Image (cartoon, rainbow, N blue to C red; front, side, top):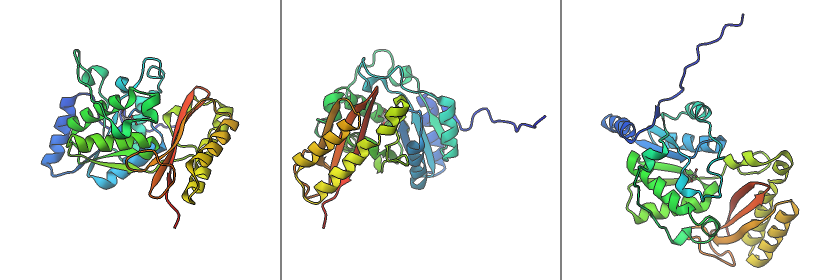
Length: 293
Ligand code: PAF
């Protein structure tokens, strides 16, 4: 018989209430420790774990949150089928050096009678803000709540959701929330596909074609960095994405890297952002465009 090592039932402490979270943070503060927060919706992959590792470099203690936030999904979207795997997530977080998992229930975040909304303009306008009009209000609401519940020194988010990162930076600043917001470059598979929990929706053939989104963006970004006009570069990228078998292209746009205002030619750092459907998966991606010379 092969001897089996005793398995710990839970690889890291799991907190489910605001009271537990606040008590944990207060104990760390009493001990003079700094705190980082990594908000996620779970179904964790290497991209999320990179955020946890960066958070560890920035603070003494790291809290990851897993909460599939209903207020950022429209009724027809994938809230119900969004992948959920608490045990797997907890094991991955522990292996990346996370100290605590905070995973509140829907009623903890949105108690009976909840009646508050946050509306963000500026970087929330256009792009995903047009195609998923409920999204950034929901993100602003849940991230504000998580910030106020945990009161971390710093919070780390991925640049994969670049517009989301800019929106979070904006409302954190506008609302004087004393949390530093740090963004981390997108983590990609070996073939360039941006890591995403939603890649799980791709069939085998779709998965093979999906990296073409990134390749098309990279080629367009090179042309734009050399001073090319947005119109030509974006038309070429659009054709390449369509030829790769993507269905609807929600958008492919060139924006200022900071304000996210539309630009037609790159004279200062810009960002090329796209969202397109491959089968049932809506994939988003973006790349920096830095003017050459
Ligand atoms: O990027 C995500 O996973 C979510 O939008 C976030 C920031 C955790 C808010 O629910």
